[in-house]
Image 1 (tube, rainbow, N blue to C red):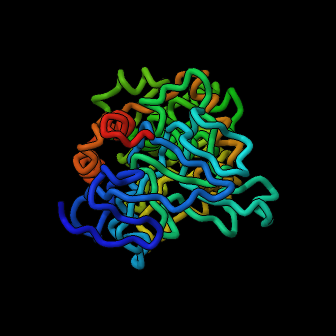
Image 2 (image 1 turned 45 degrees about the vertical axis):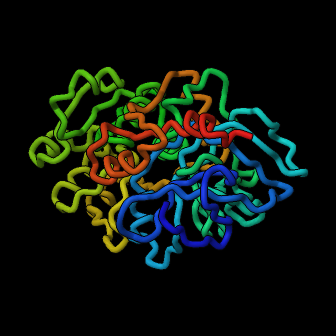
Length: 368
């Protein structure tokens, strides 16, 4: 085993036999993640330590690990923020969760509960927000994770653990804004039927909207219609987009396309007084180009959305379990974490990647 560098929070171990947990960590901004055995610091009074069952992979993990979002990232770095697991240990002040309960974690590690945004219920916009693997903490590419009770979610009965971990990020990213602005008889355009879009189609349909999927994958028409779309149209052909202009009460765009004509055509799908929602993010130094005239003259509401607040996330988990809304995933064993990351990074996976962490952790004596 290669010599592993020290970490400021966790005590690196020579082998998994002496470790509390094993992470897949990046040692620099190139290359693949490597196994990193470590011991946890003492559990805080309000902390919950979780045995991870399944972890979803998100493209933002790649942007973070490669230093594309934060050039000052500290290594070793363990990303991952789509977690379903079981409570292993709780701090003395924890009251909401007990050992053995099924729980989840999303991209947020901390909310202060005292700033103006937290008081309004928008904890995802907390002025003291800490991401799940910010502040040099390890995220969900690990056998365990330790998070403050206030940012742990209860997994509902009947939830499909093997499929559901990506909902903690991808799911709530599209569910929350759709739920905020929808009415059951609305028409909804979902642009981009990938990891986010194929979930947006399902949620919009289950909420009672008539959904058109805008995609380049016309060869997957039957599959996309099974998800809940009534119609399909091109997401990049400007003439096709012009024919759909002004037809949709809600447009949710999971893409960012640099072609200005195409991107503005996406905005023009929105009906007068309708809502255009942008959740697809461009590279950090790229600015969105809005069709100001169309937006102003048609009184379009333009909305962004950052995941969802705590209550929206818990509601999304319940809604998904009750309505059988789950991502289509490729599943990998823990030993194949680097392979899963590579497929996600190269956009080769079909919708989402999920790693079965619990199977390996239990077999290797890490469930204590």
